[in-house]
Image (cartoon, rainbow, N blue to C red):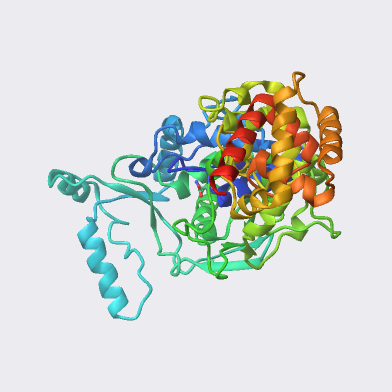
Amino acid sequence: MTVRLRYAPSPTGHLHIGGARTALFNYLYARHCGGAFILRIEDTDIDRHVDAAAEEFAQNLRWLGIEWDEGVFQGGPHAPYSCMERLPIYARYVQELKDKGLAYECFCTEDELAEAANAQVQAGEMPHYSGRCRHLSESERDAFRAQGRTPTIRLRVPDAHTVTFTDLVRGPLSFDSRSTGGDYRIVKSNGIPVYNFAVVVDDHLMEITHVIRGEEHISNTPRQLYVYEAFGWEAPRFGHVSLILGENGKKLSKRDESIVQFIEQYKELGYLPQAIFNFLALLGWSPEGEQELLGHDELIQQFDLNRLSKSGAYFDAAKLSWMNAQYLRAHDLDDLAGLAKPYLMRCVETAPWTKADSWQRELVALYQDQLTCLSELPEAARAFLSVDVEWSSEARACLRTETGALVAGQFTEMLRQLSDPITPDSARELLKSLGQKTGTKGKDLYFPVRAIATGELHGKDLNRTLALLGHSLLYARAQAALAFVSESE
Ligand code: GLU
Protein backbone atom coordinates (compact mmCIF):
# COMPACT_ATOMS: atom_id res chain seq x y z
CA MET A 1 0.00 0.00 0.00
CA THR A 2 1.26 3.47 -0.81
CA VAL A 3 0.84 5.66 2.20
CA ARG A 4 -0.63 9.12 1.72
CA LEU A 5 -0.56 11.70 4.49
CA ARG A 6 -1.55 15.29 4.69
CA TYR A 7 -1.26 18.40 6.77
CA ALA A 8 -4.48 20.39 6.71
CA PRO A 9 -4.13 23.65 8.58
CA SER A 10 -6.89 26.18 9.02
CA PRO A 11 -5.64 29.58 7.86
CA THR A 12 -6.50 31.41 11.05
CA GLY A 13 -3.09 32.81 12.01
CA HIS A 14 0.61 32.12 11.91
CA LEU A 15 2.20 28.69 11.74
CA HIS A 16 2.49 27.56 15.36
CA ILE A 17 5.14 25.13 16.59
CA GLY A 18 2.35 22.63 17.28
CA GLY A 19 1.10 22.85 13.70
CA ALA A 20 4.62 22.66 12.33
CA ARG A 21 5.21 19.53 14.40
CA THR A 22 2.04 17.94 13.03
CA ALA A 23 3.13 18.81 9.48
CA LEU A 24 6.56 17.39 10.20
CA PHE A 25 5.35 14.07 11.61
CA ASN A 26 3.07 13.52 8.61
CA TYR A 27 5.85 14.52 6.24
CA LEU A 28 8.44 12.30 7.92
CA TYR A 29 6.18 9.28 7.89
CA ALA A 30 5.19 9.82 4.26
CA ARG A 31 8.84 10.12 3.26
CA HIS A 32 9.88 7.22 5.48
CA CYS A 33 7.44 4.98 3.64
CA GLY A 34 8.13 6.43 0.20
CA GLY A 35 4.55 7.72 0.09
CA ALA A 36 2.97 11.08 -0.67
CA PHE A 37 2.57 14.17 1.47
CA ILE A 38 -0.21 16.63 0.74
CA LEU A 39 -0.85 20.19 1.90
CA ARG A 40 -4.53 21.07 2.09
CA ILE A 41 -6.02 24.27 3.44
CA GLU A 42 -9.11 23.89 5.62
CA ASP A 43 -10.63 27.31 5.25
CA THR A 44 -14.30 26.63 5.92
CA ASP A 45 -14.28 28.74 9.09
CA ILE A 46 -14.74 32.02 7.28
CA ASP A 47 -15.14 34.04 10.48
CA ARG A 48 -11.63 33.14 11.61
CA HIS A 49 -10.05 33.34 8.16
CA VAL A 50 -6.86 35.39 8.01
CA ASP A 51 -5.82 36.68 4.59
CA ALA A 52 -2.46 35.45 3.36
CA ALA A 53 -2.23 32.92 6.20
CA ALA A 54 -2.16 30.04 3.71
CA GLU A 55 0.72 31.66 1.80
CA GLU A 56 2.58 32.16 5.05
CA PHE A 57 2.02 28.53 6.06
CA ALA A 58 3.38 27.39 2.74
CA GLN A 59 6.42 29.66 2.94
CA ASN A 60 7.20 28.60 6.46
CA LEU A 61 6.82 24.91 5.70
CA ARG A 62 9.16 25.26 2.73
CA TRP A 63 11.57 27.21 4.90
CA LEU A 64 11.56 24.33 7.39
CA GLY A 65 12.40 21.92 4.59
CA ILE A 66 8.95 20.35 4.39
CA GLU A 67 7.94 19.99 0.75
CA TRP A 68 4.64 18.54 -0.41
CA ASP A 69 3.93 16.43 -3.45
CA GLU A 70 0.40 17.66 -3.95
CA GLY A 71 -1.54 20.54 -2.56
CA VAL A 72 -2.05 24.24 -2.53
CA PHE A 73 0.49 26.27 -4.52
CA GLN A 74 1.54 23.00 -6.11
CA GLY A 75 -1.46 21.33 -7.72
CA GLY A 76 -2.02 17.63 -8.19
CA PRO A 77 -4.57 15.06 -9.26
CA HIS A 78 -7.03 15.95 -6.51
CA ALA A 79 -7.04 19.73 -7.01
CA PRO A 80 -8.38 22.05 -5.78
CA TYR A 81 -6.73 21.68 -2.38
CA SER A 82 -8.48 24.33 -0.36
CA CYS A 83 -11.93 23.62 1.03
CA MET A 84 -13.64 26.79 -0.10
CA GLU A 85 -12.82 25.82 -3.67
CA ARG A 86 -14.37 22.40 -3.10
CA LEU A 87 -17.86 23.48 -2.07
CA PRO A 88 -19.56 21.88 -5.11
CA ILE A 89 -17.88 18.58 -4.23
CA TYR A 90 -19.19 18.66 -0.65
CA ALA A 91 -22.64 19.64 -1.90
CA ARG A 92 -22.80 16.46 -3.99
CA TYR A 93 -21.94 14.30 -1.01
CA VAL A 94 -24.36 16.10 1.28
CA GLN A 95 -27.06 15.45 -1.32
CA GLU A 96 -26.14 11.79 -1.40
CA LEU A 97 -26.63 11.52 2.37
CA LYS A 98 -29.91 13.40 2.18
CA ASP A 99 -31.11 11.11 -0.59
CA LYS A 100 -30.28 8.11 1.57
CA GLY A 101 -32.09 9.64 4.54
CA LEU A 102 -28.82 9.92 6.44
CA ALA A 103 -28.80 13.71 6.62
CA TYR A 104 -31.63 16.15 7.09
CA GLU A 105 -32.44 19.83 7.31
CA CYS A 106 -32.65 21.26 10.81
CA PHE A 107 -34.52 24.51 11.45
CA CYS A 108 -33.82 24.85 15.17
CA THR A 109 -32.56 28.28 16.13
CA GLU A 110 -29.53 28.87 18.32
CA ASP A 111 -31.82 29.93 21.18
CA GLU A 112 -33.92 26.80 20.92
CA LEU A 113 -30.83 24.62 20.87
CA ALA A 114 -29.33 26.39 23.86
CA GLU A 115 -32.58 26.00 25.78
CA ALA A 116 -32.79 22.29 25.03
CA ALA A 117 -29.14 21.79 25.99
CA ASN A 118 -29.72 23.63 29.28
CA ALA A 119 -32.68 21.47 30.11
CA GLN A 120 -30.60 18.35 29.45
CA VAL A 121 -27.80 19.58 31.67
CA GLN A 122 -30.35 20.35 34.43
CA ALA A 123 -31.62 16.81 34.10
CA GLY A 124 -28.06 15.51 34.51
CA GLU A 125 -27.70 14.47 30.86
CA MET A 126 -24.92 15.15 28.40
CA PRO A 127 -26.13 17.85 25.99
CA HIS A 128 -27.13 16.24 22.74
CA TYR A 129 -29.36 17.09 19.81
CA SER A 130 -32.90 16.01 20.59
CA GLY A 131 -33.66 14.89 17.07
CA ARG A 132 -36.49 17.39 16.79
CA CYS A 133 -36.06 17.97 13.05
CA ARG A 134 -35.26 14.38 12.16
CA HIS A 135 -38.69 13.59 10.85
CA LEU A 136 -40.07 16.87 9.54
CA SER A 137 -42.55 16.62 6.71
CA GLU A 138 -42.20 18.69 3.56
CA SER A 139 -44.95 21.04 4.75
CA GLU A 140 -43.33 21.51 8.20
CA ARG A 141 -40.11 22.44 6.48
CA ASP A 142 -41.94 24.88 4.23
CA ALA A 143 -43.57 26.43 7.30
CA PHE A 144 -40.20 27.01 8.93
CA ARG A 145 -38.90 28.51 5.71
CA ALA A 146 -41.86 30.81 5.60
CA GLN A 147 -40.83 32.02 9.07
CA GLY A 148 -37.53 33.07 7.51
CA ARG A 149 -35.50 30.26 9.10
CA THR A 150 -32.49 29.03 7.15
CA PRO A 151 -31.75 25.37 7.72
CA THR A 152 -28.52 23.71 8.74
CA ILE A 153 -27.94 20.11 7.76
CA ARG A 154 -27.44 17.42 10.34
CA LEU A 155 -25.98 13.97 9.99
CA ARG A 156 -28.23 11.26 11.33
CA VAL A 157 -26.09 9.48 13.89
CA PRO A 158 -27.51 6.12 14.92
CA ASP A 159 -28.87 6.16 18.49
CA ALA A 160 -26.90 4.32 21.14
CA HIS A 161 -24.19 3.71 18.62
CA THR A 162 -20.56 3.12 19.51
CA VAL A 163 -17.60 3.74 17.24
CA THR A 164 -14.25 2.21 17.99
CA PHE A 165 -10.88 2.82 16.44
CA THR A 166 -7.34 1.90 17.27
CA ASP A 167 -5.37 5.04 17.66
CA LEU A 168 -1.79 4.72 16.43
CA VAL A 169 -0.56 6.40 19.60
CA ARG A 170 -3.16 5.56 22.22
CA GLY A 171 -4.47 2.16 21.21
CA PRO A 172 -8.19 1.24 21.13
CA LEU A 173 -10.63 4.06 21.84
CA SER A 174 -14.41 4.06 21.72
CA PHE A 175 -17.10 6.71 21.85
CA ASP A 176 -20.85 6.42 21.98
CA SER A 177 -23.15 8.65 20.05
CA ARG A 178 -24.73 10.17 23.18
CA SER A 179 -21.39 11.43 24.44
CA THR A 180 -20.61 12.98 21.07
CA GLY A 181 -23.84 15.02 21.01
CA GLY A 182 -25.99 12.89 18.72
CA ASP A 183 -26.91 14.15 15.25
CA TYR A 184 -24.52 16.97 14.47
CA ARG A 185 -24.42 19.77 11.95
CA ILE A 186 -22.47 18.95 8.85
CA VAL A 187 -23.52 22.10 6.99
CA LYS A 188 -23.93 25.48 8.62
CA SER A 189 -26.79 27.84 7.83
CA ASN A 190 -24.47 29.74 5.47
CA GLY A 191 -24.29 26.60 3.33
CA ILE A 192 -20.65 25.88 4.18
CA PRO A 193 -19.84 22.42 5.52
CA VAL A 194 -18.18 22.08 8.90
CA TYR A 195 -14.65 20.83 9.28
CA ASN A 196 -15.76 17.41 10.57
CA PHE A 197 -17.61 16.75 7.32
CA ALA A 198 -15.30 18.38 4.78
CA VAL A 199 -12.27 16.65 6.26
CA VAL A 200 -13.80 13.23 5.69
CA VAL A 201 -14.80 13.91 2.09
CA ASP A 202 -11.35 15.32 1.40
CA ASP A 203 -9.40 12.59 3.17
CA HIS A 204 -11.46 9.97 1.36
CA LEU A 205 -11.18 11.50 -2.10
CA MET A 206 -7.50 12.23 -1.61
CA GLU A 207 -6.97 8.61 -0.55
CA ILE A 208 -5.37 9.54 2.75
CA THR A 209 -4.18 6.45 4.58
CA HIS A 210 -2.90 7.93 7.86
CA VAL A 211 -3.90 11.03 9.79
CA ILE A 212 -1.47 12.21 12.42
CA ARG A 213 -2.75 15.20 14.31
CA GLY A 214 -2.88 16.81 17.73
CA GLU A 215 -4.60 15.25 20.72
CA GLU A 216 -7.14 18.08 20.70
CA HIS A 217 -8.71 16.41 17.67
CA ILE A 218 -9.52 13.11 19.42
CA SER A 219 -13.05 14.26 20.16
CA ASN A 220 -13.56 15.06 16.46
CA THR A 221 -12.62 11.59 15.35
CA PRO A 222 -15.89 9.82 16.30
CA ARG A 223 -17.86 12.48 14.44
CA GLN A 224 -15.70 11.88 11.41
CA LEU A 225 -16.11 8.13 11.76
CA TYR A 226 -19.90 8.52 11.63
CA VAL A 227 -19.47 10.16 8.23
CA TYR A 228 -17.22 7.35 7.02
CA GLU A 229 -19.84 4.87 8.17
CA ALA A 230 -22.67 6.78 6.51
CA PHE A 231 -20.90 6.60 3.16
CA GLY A 232 -19.57 3.10 3.72
CA TRP A 233 -16.00 4.33 3.25
CA GLU A 234 -12.94 2.92 4.89
CA ALA A 235 -11.43 5.38 7.37
CA PRO A 236 -7.72 6.12 7.47
CA ARG A 237 -5.61 5.17 10.50
CA PHE A 238 -5.60 7.93 13.09
CA GLY A 239 -2.78 8.86 15.44
CA HIS A 240 -3.26 11.63 17.96
CA VAL A 241 0.00 13.04 19.20
CA SER A 242 0.48 14.35 22.69
CA LEU A 243 0.06 17.94 23.71
CA ILE A 244 2.98 20.30 23.87
CA LEU A 245 3.59 21.38 27.45
CA GLY A 246 5.02 24.68 28.63
CA GLU A 247 7.61 25.12 31.34
CA ASN A 248 4.98 24.84 34.06
CA GLY A 249 4.10 21.36 32.78
CA LYS A 250 0.69 22.58 31.59
CA LYS A 251 -0.60 22.65 28.02
CA LEU A 252 1.30 25.34 26.18
CA SER A 253 -0.93 28.34 25.79
CA LYS A 254 -0.57 30.42 22.64
CA ARG A 255 -0.68 33.44 24.90
CA ASP A 256 2.33 32.34 26.93
CA GLU A 257 4.86 34.93 25.88
CA SER A 258 7.75 33.34 27.74
CA ILE A 259 8.07 30.85 24.90
CA VAL A 260 8.49 31.82 21.27
CA GLN A 261 5.76 29.82 19.56
CA PHE A 262 5.50 30.80 15.93
CA ILE A 263 7.80 29.68 13.14
CA GLU A 264 7.82 33.18 11.68
CA GLN A 265 9.32 34.46 14.94
CA TYR A 266 12.05 31.86 14.91
CA LYS A 267 12.84 32.87 11.36
CA GLU A 268 13.14 36.51 12.41
CA LEU A 269 15.32 35.59 15.37
CA GLY A 270 17.74 33.88 13.03
CA TYR A 271 17.19 30.25 13.95
CA LEU A 272 18.23 27.71 11.38
CA PRO A 273 15.35 25.73 9.90
CA GLN A 274 17.41 22.55 10.20
CA ALA A 275 17.60 23.01 13.97
CA ILE A 276 13.87 23.59 14.31
CA PHE A 277 13.16 20.61 12.08
CA ASN A 278 15.33 18.45 14.32
CA PHE A 279 13.90 19.88 17.54
CA LEU A 280 10.27 19.50 16.50
CA ALA A 281 10.84 15.92 15.41
CA LEU A 282 11.85 15.10 18.99
CA LEU A 283 8.80 16.80 20.48
CA GLY A 284 6.69 13.74 21.18
CA TRP A 285 8.76 11.27 19.19
CA SER A 286 12.11 9.74 19.99
CA PRO A 287 14.62 7.80 17.93
CA GLU A 288 15.85 4.45 19.11
CA GLY A 289 19.32 5.54 20.21
CA GLU A 290 20.47 8.43 22.35
CA GLN A 291 21.47 10.64 19.43
CA GLU A 292 19.72 14.00 19.49
CA LEU A 293 21.23 15.80 16.54
CA LEU A 294 19.56 14.23 13.55
CA GLY A 295 19.43 15.72 10.10
CA HIS A 296 16.59 15.68 7.58
CA ASP A 297 17.52 12.38 5.94
CA GLU A 298 18.36 10.61 9.19
CA LEU A 299 15.00 11.61 10.63
CA ILE A 300 13.20 10.32 7.56
CA GLN A 301 15.06 7.07 7.82
CA GLN A 302 14.40 6.60 11.54
CA PHE A 303 10.90 8.01 11.93
CA ASP A 304 8.22 5.49 12.70
CA LEU A 305 4.86 5.59 14.39
CA ASN A 306 5.75 3.15 17.16
CA ARG A 307 7.87 5.66 18.98
CA LEU A 308 5.33 8.47 19.24
CA SER A 309 4.90 9.30 22.88
CA LYS A 310 1.59 9.15 24.76
CA SER A 311 2.67 11.62 27.40
CA GLY A 312 2.87 15.38 26.95
CA ALA A 313 5.90 16.76 25.14
CA TYR A 314 7.72 19.32 27.25
CA PHE A 315 8.86 22.31 25.19
CA ASP A 316 12.41 22.82 26.34
CA ALA A 317 13.38 26.24 24.96
CA ALA A 318 16.91 25.92 26.36
CA LYS A 319 17.35 22.71 24.42
CA LEU A 320 16.21 24.41 21.24
CA SER A 321 18.77 27.19 21.79
CA TRP A 322 21.46 24.60 22.41
CA MET A 323 20.45 22.71 19.30
CA ASN A 324 20.43 25.83 17.17
CA ALA A 325 23.90 26.74 18.45
CA GLN A 326 25.12 23.29 17.37
CA TYR A 327 23.63 23.74 13.92
CA LEU A 328 25.10 27.24 13.62
CA ARG A 329 28.57 25.92 14.43
CA ALA A 330 28.32 23.16 11.89
CA HIS A 331 26.80 25.36 9.19
CA ASP A 332 28.61 26.31 5.99
CA LEU A 333 30.26 29.68 6.64
CA ASP A 334 29.40 31.28 3.30
CA ASP A 335 25.78 30.34 3.68
CA LEU A 336 25.71 31.53 7.27
CA ALA A 337 27.20 34.87 6.24
CA GLY A 338 24.37 35.22 3.74
CA LEU A 339 21.82 34.49 6.47
CA ALA A 340 23.47 36.97 8.84
CA LYS A 341 23.47 39.70 6.22
CA PRO A 342 20.04 41.17 7.02
CA TYR A 343 21.04 41.66 10.65
CA LEU A 344 24.31 43.31 9.69
CA MET A 345 22.84 45.50 6.96
CA ARG A 346 20.90 47.33 9.65
CA CYS A 347 24.21 48.82 10.81
CA VAL A 348 25.49 49.91 7.42
CA GLU A 349 24.34 53.48 7.61
CA THR A 350 26.30 54.31 10.72
CA ALA A 351 29.12 51.84 10.12
CA PRO A 352 29.73 51.73 6.36
CA TRP A 353 32.69 49.34 6.56
CA THR A 354 30.27 46.59 7.63
CA LYS A 355 28.81 46.41 4.16
CA ALA A 356 31.43 44.29 2.38
CA ASP A 357 30.56 40.62 1.99
CA SER A 358 34.07 39.51 2.83
CA TRP A 359 34.07 41.61 6.01
CA GLN A 360 30.73 40.19 7.07
CA ARG A 361 31.99 36.68 6.43
CA GLU A 362 34.98 37.24 8.72
CA LEU A 363 32.79 38.68 11.43
CA VAL A 364 30.43 35.71 11.26
CA ALA A 365 33.41 33.35 11.33
CA LEU A 366 34.60 35.05 14.50
CA TYR A 367 31.24 34.63 16.27
CA GLN A 368 29.96 31.41 14.72
CA ASP A 369 30.77 29.33 17.79
CA GLN A 370 29.22 31.73 20.27
CA LEU A 371 25.73 32.45 18.98
CA THR A 372 22.52 30.65 19.80
CA CYS A 373 20.74 32.54 17.04
CA LEU A 374 21.83 34.99 14.36
CA SER A 375 19.89 37.95 15.69
CA GLU A 376 22.26 37.94 18.66
CA LEU A 377 25.12 38.87 16.36
CA PRO A 378 24.73 42.70 16.35
CA GLU A 379 24.76 42.82 20.14
CA ALA A 380 27.52 40.23 20.56
CA ALA A 381 29.68 42.00 17.96
CA ARG A 382 28.64 45.55 18.82
CA ALA A 383 32.25 46.73 19.07
CA PHE A 384 32.62 46.00 15.34
CA LEU A 385 29.44 47.64 14.24
CA SER A 386 29.69 51.23 15.35
CA VAL A 387 32.28 53.99 15.30
CA ASP A 388 32.26 54.59 19.01
CA VAL A 389 32.91 52.01 21.59
CA GLU A 390 31.80 52.00 25.18
CA TRP A 391 34.57 51.29 27.66
CA SER A 392 33.63 48.93 30.42
CA SER A 393 34.72 49.94 33.90
CA GLU A 394 37.44 47.24 33.76
CA ALA A 395 38.69 48.64 30.46
CA ARG A 396 38.80 52.15 31.91
CA ALA A 397 40.64 50.96 34.98
CA CYS A 398 43.11 49.07 32.82
CA LEU A 399 43.88 52.09 30.65
CA ARG A 400 44.43 54.20 33.76
CA THR A 401 47.19 51.96 35.10
CA GLU A 402 50.77 52.90 34.38
CA THR A 403 51.41 49.92 32.07
CA GLY A 404 48.00 50.38 30.46
CA ALA A 405 48.74 53.98 29.62
CA LEU A 406 52.22 53.08 28.37
CA VAL A 407 50.92 50.34 26.07
CA ALA A 408 48.05 52.55 24.89
CA GLY A 409 50.41 55.41 24.05
CA GLN A 410 52.83 53.20 22.16
CA PHE A 411 50.07 51.32 20.37
CA THR A 412 48.58 54.62 19.20
CA GLU A 413 51.92 55.76 17.94
CA MET A 414 52.47 52.54 16.04
CA LEU A 415 49.04 52.85 14.47
CA ARG A 416 49.83 56.43 13.47
CA GLN A 417 52.89 55.26 11.60
CA LEU A 418 51.23 52.23 10.04
CA SER A 419 50.30 52.51 6.41
CA ASP A 420 49.49 48.92 5.42
CA PRO A 421 46.11 47.40 6.11
CA ILE A 422 46.01 45.13 9.15
CA THR A 423 45.72 41.39 8.62
CA PRO A 424 45.65 38.75 11.37
CA ASP A 425 49.32 38.01 10.58
CA SER A 426 50.43 41.63 10.58
CA ALA A 427 48.46 42.16 13.81
CA ARG A 428 50.50 39.38 15.41
CA GLU A 429 53.73 41.11 14.36
CA LEU A 430 52.41 44.46 15.53
CA LEU A 431 51.62 43.09 18.97
CA LYS A 432 54.99 41.39 19.16
CA SER A 433 56.83 44.59 18.52
CA LEU A 434 54.48 46.52 20.84
CA GLY A 435 55.43 44.05 23.58
CA GLN A 436 59.10 44.52 22.86
CA LYS A 437 58.90 48.31 22.79
CA THR A 438 56.95 48.53 26.05
CA GLY A 439 58.56 45.60 27.81
CA THR A 440 55.18 44.02 28.42
CA LYS A 441 53.64 40.64 27.69
CA GLY A 442 50.57 38.58 28.49
CA LYS A 443 47.69 40.46 30.08
CA ASP A 444 49.77 43.62 30.55
CA LEU A 445 50.09 43.81 26.81
CA TYR A 446 46.80 42.39 25.58
CA PHE A 447 44.37 43.95 28.02
CA PRO A 448 45.09 47.60 27.07
CA VAL A 449 45.08 46.73 23.37
CA ARG A 450 41.81 44.93 23.70
CA ALA A 451 40.39 47.72 25.84
CA ILE A 452 41.23 50.23 23.11
CA ALA A 453 39.93 48.04 20.33
CA THR A 454 36.69 46.80 21.81
CA GLY A 455 36.09 48.54 25.14
CA GLU A 456 36.31 45.16 26.89
CA LEU A 457 39.16 43.15 28.35
CA HIS A 458 37.94 39.82 26.99
CA GLY A 459 36.71 38.79 23.61
CA LYS A 460 37.43 36.95 20.44
CA ASP A 461 40.83 36.16 18.93
CA LEU A 462 42.76 39.41 19.21
CA ASN A 463 44.66 39.24 15.91
CA ARG A 464 41.50 38.63 13.94
CA THR A 465 39.70 41.28 15.97
CA LEU A 466 42.28 43.92 15.11
CA ALA A 467 42.28 42.94 11.43
CA LEU A 468 38.54 43.10 11.25
CA LEU A 469 38.30 46.47 12.95
CA GLY A 470 40.84 47.84 10.49
CA HIS A 471 43.41 50.52 10.74
CA SER A 472 41.40 53.74 10.68
CA LEU A 473 38.77 52.63 13.20
CA LEU A 474 41.45 51.31 15.54
CA TYR A 475 43.48 54.49 15.26
CA ALA A 476 40.43 56.64 15.98
CA ARG A 477 39.61 54.49 19.02
CA ALA A 478 43.20 54.59 20.23
CA GLN A 479 43.20 58.38 20.06
CA ALA A 480 39.91 58.56 21.88
CA ALA A 481 41.21 56.20 24.56
CA LEU A 482 44.36 58.28 25.00
CA ALA A 483 42.36 61.45 25.33
CA PHE A 484 40.15 59.76 27.86
CA VAL A 485 43.18 58.49 29.86
CA SER A 486 44.85 61.90 29.92
CA GLU A 487 41.58 63.61 30.86
CA SER A 488 41.12 61.33 33.82
CA GLU A 489 44.66 61.89 35.07
N1 GLU B 1 -7.80 22.11 10.19
C1 GLU B 1 -7.47 21.32 11.33
C2 GLU B 1 -6.49 22.07 12.18
O1 GLU B 1 -5.94 23.06 11.74
C3 GLU B 1 -6.87 20.01 10.88
C4 GLU B 1 -7.30 18.86 11.64
C5 GLU B 1 -6.97 17.56 10.98
O2 GLU B 1 -5.79 17.33 10.72
O3 GLU B 1 -7.86 16.80 10.69
O4 GLU B 1 -6.25 21.72 13.30
